[in-house]
Length: 275
Image (cartoon, one colour):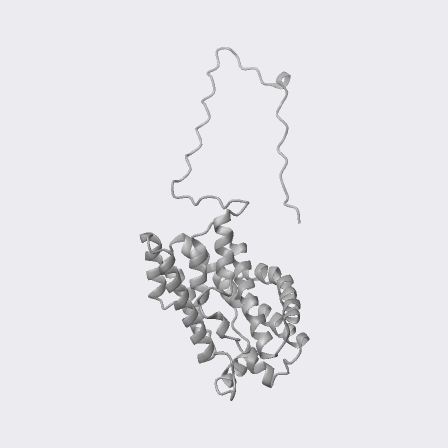
């Protein structure tokens, strides 16, 4: 929808100006505008600088050493027990997971934690991190977010070895203990990326990892995996838009079938993945 704009009235013509008697005092000059606060955040550029764009691509890469490749988030047990045995079934499963768990939970946390890190609001960061920990429904899912959060904190410590300010934030993250969505938000907070761009990168990184899990677990061919990834990529902008509009009371962590399957995965006889 195009933004609604107000049209300013046209300035009066010179012949319409009100004449002031010579004896009338001159009007007082308009006060000068107040200077901008020195602490005001810099405007986010319309074109993302190359360094920030590359940082987002880096964070979304499956090659990021956080261990994401070792988790299937319940997909492996769904292949055995929930009929996810074809390309179509795997695509449906992952798209539902994107909309039901990522958009309503993790992506909303990344959005809110990004703002908190940029504002220096440590208490808000802690509250969001606690929410993630409290809403992981199985030991596997909690261990996943904790392990990936710690690994990303270690990576950030290495990346910012010469920056005391950045290292102070990393120390605050490591002390939580960190969850992956909150750690990802800190990793992106020092870029100039818009919140939407950060969430798009986070969601696409999740999608790539999950498609690779599907290729191994279902199993599927590479072409099938690319078709699933294309379907997820088409759905990601909508998931991100939904996540960005959620307030605290609207976040959700309710996926009972996934929780049951995750619990069953802990005792699955033969498995490739840690969740």
